[in-house]
Length: 478
Ligand code: MTE
Image (cartoon, rainbow, N blue to C red; front, side):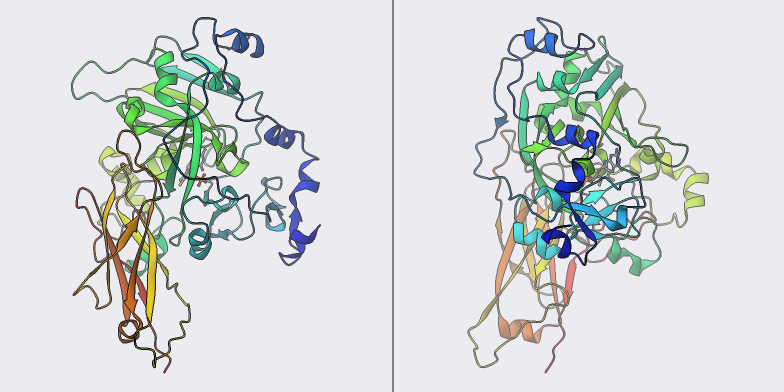
């Protein structure tokens, strides 16, 4: 162990010394990421072992760098402290590097963790990769860059198996996207009755610059077929390489084909996060990124895509990332009465949400009553799915009778299609005496369609989509 190890009660093993023993891992940090894609097909033909490479003349773009919006963001700093963790040593994840500051949600395995709110806010717009929240349903698959393939089949004229090198031949796009788990803030829901699922705080949300090929380009290359009849929908069914209970199935889910093919939706086959290759926890070597949708649709360790006239029949598509009506009170009823397979309860777009970050729960504020002019800054984040802009954030100090209009800052420009794929930050300064006299701070946000947050949570069996007013109680210690 080294100095970093000792900072974690001796439980933390330094990254560098341990990783070098794993051949798979060397593959992970080996390839140089931002190499130029092939210009005219020759490179792709020669480099892909003659197996599944693109044929000469099939390359669909000329060489170019990542297509970026005109942005001022910079990649977040790489945060030290990443390493193997004793708590994972008895699991199949013993080789996976993790940051000790991620708060582990329920048990040690599979790994699920969220950063503390103060950490998220400290880094601001872009979350360092090692502190990005993690949602895993099982052990992280060991993967090699060179050996990885994605099989693309189904309703198309040219089904194909793609290597990672093949993917690099497509034009690449890089853009900041906020991922939020459907279960973000689910811990607050338990007050309305027992719900299933993990109990997340308000940190199951993070923002990275994701880079990769656009799914629409790859599917177009495969000659994807679009439904001809009005009212008929096709689906992109994706699965990952993780082997999960029950019956060693993999994590699978689907998104509507029209979303995948809509250029303005920016759905990516991402192989890059914050300028580096993906890390094991976030889907190395390739994952789907579906901006504006729940994080659950962004399949990690992606190895199969099938275009189908049916939604995914994966256990995880049917049993996860749904919001069932509140009358469905237990899992047996949900399954036996067929609630789980009804498409209208699938969560895709996230709803509007906002959270207070300062003051934090359990934070002690020292207030000088003799300074009547003193002001305190209440701050937090807000986000809405489907690319909608947050147009208004309001804070109340009197339980919702009156509201203060907050200033809202978007670090990222909208995309060229006008989409807001990442979160924003808000602030309002209040008189400290007002704060002292209040018993609770409450926030609500509104998006550009005037959707806002409800006062109370809507209990639901799987504990998803909680976006009720976020509250921080004030206790006076006179
Ligand atoms: N993909 C696979 N293969 N296996 C998984 O367990 N979890 C999903 C999604 N993709 C999952 C997956 C869920 S529920 C979420 S919220 C996001 O990954 C989280 O992505 P992250 O761990 O990179 O934050």
